[in-house]
Image (cartoon, rainbow over all chains, first blue to last red; front, top):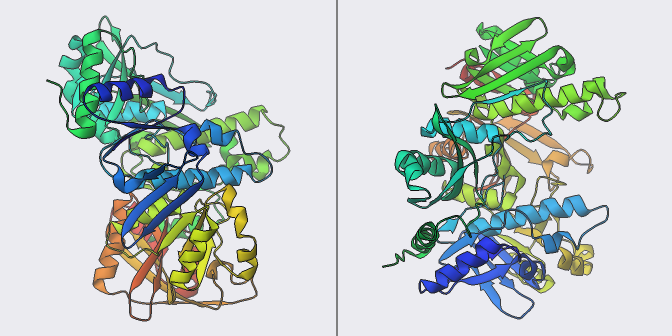
Length: 248
Length: 306
């Protein structure tokens, strides 16, 4: 079973599920609302490894051992769950549930796009400074990043508007040809170094410096990324990465 | 150049500073309580990570800093800011200094004890247990559930069981007793972590790079860290680990991306070691003071490039 985990309104995840179906796979979409309404959770860790069984409100069961691949678009606890909890213990409950989701998602077998991390359930939600440093190491040209103690850290740091994006999926890079040709190897290195097999990387074009990386995200938009050929290539890459299914 | 950061009188930081001085290693201290007199500028470009750090009257080139050991407290709670209203210039400056320092520390080349990201696993114990198991260390049989029946069945299988938080919050171990069983329905709201009660003796293993400092703790409390509060006692003594177990502790520390860790083991009557968790920012001074193990000296050597 290929599992697609997402919030109810995640158009990208729903598009991906459709695309996987069209490529002969039968993904099971489980939404944040489904998880928030789960009747029982049974997660075990020990000598036999780790597994989890969830009984959903409709009576169906979700077993980790039945999973062969996961498109994981739950970057945080489900919104439907968050809406239910208040009171003085809310922060504690959030910490506990986050720890629980992290462990459960980590225990899911098969390729996971993206594996959970303590810094984000759908991959490490890095600060722009960390993305920039990682991109330099990967060999990408970057917009210089500067932060000082005169700046307000609460303000957004990414001020350069991206003009193009590539999406790394496993071993493939999808996006505008000119951008991919020049940066494919470096983008793959960045994805690998970030531990994020699904990664959106943003660029801007400078007349003198050429293409410069401006940011990256572990939750890239997947639907409507541009030309139809890119959309099809992205769907193929997802199917390949999740199940080894290459479209003809 | 080595950079230390935190409150100078805090024992773990003070001991490392003293050890560095004894080594004759050059170091500077970012004193959080004087952060009003500090400034930092971080620059990342094609040449890598650079910038400057001003500590009172001296300005350092960040590229000259080869090692870092930070024990930073929450800057919002600094005594110097107590009288400052929310959003005051002093509070904003303190926040900006700390934020920029953290950003730099996360990507700085050199030896950083420890970066923030790798410390994250300690905030999710069952996740960390899965990582620990990869290094050949036994982890306790664990059930996380919101189903009272499953918990009772788990207890029937394992006999006595304990419960504790999954996150780093309220991390106190308690036995599941009859009173708890009577209110077990409460777990339906949020899954709770239960574990088999592992018999044996607690051992805290501090790992500094490849140096290993095991400390045995004999206590009559379920959780020795809180022995005094629960009316119990704890006695510490330095011990030796067998070479294979020591090597696993070293590999685990490195595998988690840490260069300094406090690993909590329990050695069972048959010699089996069970690993409960890895603390990425251990307050080692308590163990060093009670055993004489030279943990600070080891950390100082590591920071100095040894």
